[in-house]
Length: 449
Image 1 (cartoon, rainbow, N blue to C red):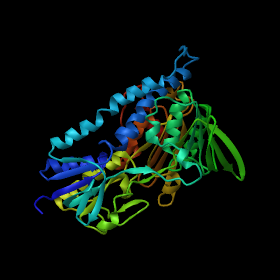
Image 2: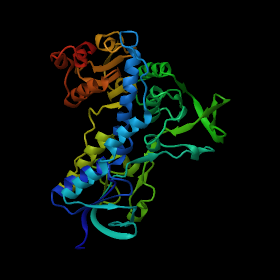
Image 3: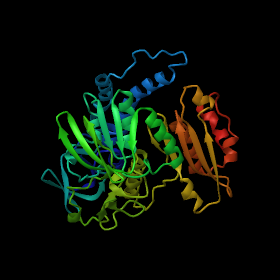
Image 4: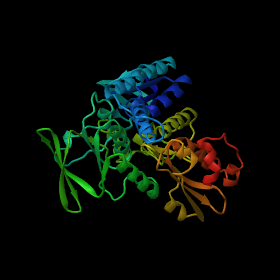
């Protein structure tokens, strides 16, 4: 039809806006829709605002670590409302900025609820639109929890918008959200507890480094329960009472706030995928390697809403959106390259990973594992941190790095170098032949190999 879009994008987060801008800039008639403010989880309700709040926690923690080394901590504390205003100074301008970029490239922006009504039709708040192609980039949403009282939980979005920080906070789940938010809240003066149903939190990361981080987490005043299930949450005269079960023993915890940190799932409810013949699962829209739906060729998916080999990370969403756009524009079947993508848990200190875990590498490679306790190294001593370590996994046949795992202050920058090495296939000999500025964290690289 003459009024049809070349592309309609559902979701104005990083995957959706990347694709929409790329296709609109090439002259396609592009529409993009979101029921929430433009910007997506990362910019508005996740990575970026979280790290702004973390900055306050970093400063408090850094001062405490240096308290016996000539720095007087005094009355240093986090003013939560002021820190939240600082956060909003960034997030408040994001939606308009993103929408202005889209319209500047010629895209048509919509605000409202979208759902499929046919293979090539989508309604937005009751108005039907036709398109030759669609990109589903709706991101993820908190995993539904079904125990009694689950409705009392707040999610990560609500936590990042708290006007005041409660005194007693319980985080349910042992993943990114719980650990990062607990580290922030504890430095801001809250009493924090993490409840993990499994034996090891942060299961995608190196177990040895996770144990070190968990000990450091406890030292920061955050209690971590393992092998523990929440059985109920009840409203109490002052806050909430949480019933937990650990190896058959029931305990009750009191809290002023309970936060959902038990994982996220693709946000596909309400899209009516069946009406367009789009296959999906709990992992997202089912796509081929080049991000095209396996059941409706007019549909592509990217980011957390797609069932791909990529991790649910913002940089992955960005390049999946760009790859999907390129494949649609050119009619190609290029698959995204996920090699060398690092990921970080922004606790204090931060935990990082790129490449394979030790046990993964050992199944198909001859490996050498180089573990180094860096807690007494100069770069760690300088900032008075007490916990830092690295584990590098090397293919002994090729001298290439298979995996790098780092825990320490500022190591989220150093992990990027390992990501480049894995991406480009550099050998440890090549890495050790480089010279870094000194004294810097990067100058530790050669000694870790």
